[in-house]
Image (tube, rainbow, N blue to C red; front, side, top):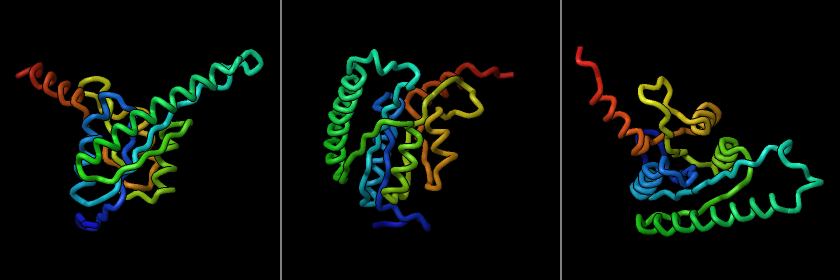
Length: 169
């Protein structure tokens, strides 16, 4: 374990949805974990479909099969990320759960006693007052754990575009 000021980093929770918005966060979390000799717990939440949208009497098991396929696809993606973590010489494991993403992240962070939550930041529009997606915003305001949001490459491109289009007056 290494320390940064008063921050001890033994375990990092990396929230991922496998989107392009989380690419930088994945790299950042792995690099940070390597520097601190910390473990990475990757968490992926699968949002459920509103119960009102599913008529259980008419469902022929299609939704159960659908979510089973999502869990299996997520498991394969996370296994690939575990292999990438090994390239960084970082110990990594994962957790998949069906539920509200932000709640899963916050609860897993508490359950696993993580030192830091790392998340990607989803770009919405240029010059936005708050540049956090719904999940990152909810985690940021709900978690008693430190939360680090990492700008995506898309955020960086939008910032460059904004600077190029600024009015010089």
